[in-house]
Length: 510
Image (tube, rainbow, N blue to C red; front, top):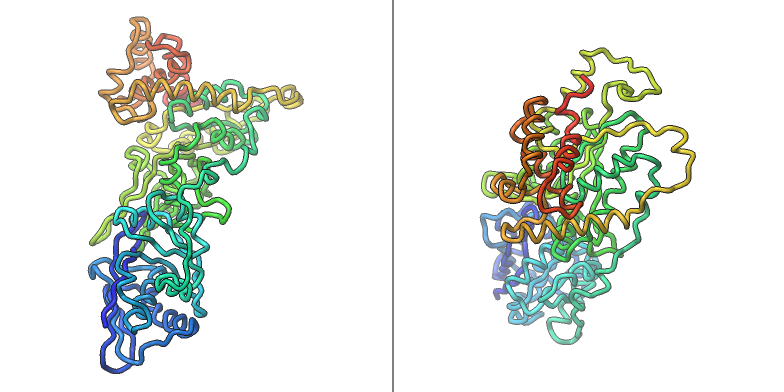
């Protein structure tokens, strides 16, 4: 007897439909898997056999052939177990094969027949919705995560036995309520706040500009000046995630198995801070079976690279294309995996090898050649892709001894939201949402300058020898500063402030 059931294979973040075909025929007892399975899928033979028997079903004592179609798509992982087991039970006459025609099933089986939580459920359910099955069966442990997706009935099952009884009609398992409003509540109030940062008024202003325009930023200052403290508070002034953004971000974390039981949907922008020893694959993604990297886990959030010059040169250079395009494309022989990487890069570094070049309280021990060599660890092309270079001075004792009197994150966030609203209205026809995304033709249209501002920009370009990319960056930053001031035209004051945020281009130290 032949039985068919639908499931999905994960290739990067893409869930590809897979049809499980099971045939039980005369021949020597055995279970054969075909259709390009990897080792984990091949081992399903033993898991499925034990799960079926321990669920009080009989395993066919004849030849069983399982085909995973299409045959040219590599099948990886243990989440095919449930679909394979249902096909075998149905082809053995213990379940009507017709009950499997309009459903999809996904989940890894334990030897006792119970279902384990499976990574990547969210992108699988999102892909299943497009095929419009009557329902999709998922492990009960993944039910809350799967129910985030609207428009498809999600049936949580705890075991193979439950799945068979539900499909046969002897046990009615209600589908989860899709898109529960409770899932959209913010998990916690922000644990940190900009009001806790002593001093650093100019740095906080620069970060407000960076977030308002979604610009990449580099923090430069001596040890202990508060670079990490400032970076950790950036998500508190970013706009809240929209539902579409939350789904995109959660899908990446779902594939990596990083979602907690109590938070099936990410409602706060991610903040990822990989160590400087991370490899290019860990940061960008890839590997034999392509997986997302830290830049994709930071999608719609912040990627914080502390001690930027300590990262390997090839790792830093691999950032250039993802920062420019907003996505990572990992090509393989037969298929390419695409991972999203639209994040805000926040990097931090010391001004020199010893760290005290700009600190008036300590004497710098570096020679001129050492300073140049240290700064040269960051290539010009990468530096050009970072919009703002912010000097973070050491905080004097008088400022540290004061109480927390800085502006709160909530107050800064209100100004950021107002600036973002202006940008959305201006960029509505382009499909962009922030000034940092503007292309050259958008800059020409959206960045009108007064005659005084044009003269100032010309003088700066000649005096500091800015590159063409730096020219565009300055105009984008000035546009954001004007938006924060609710101005349609870029004034000389806006342009002058934007120029101040290109300190490395201006070579202030060397």
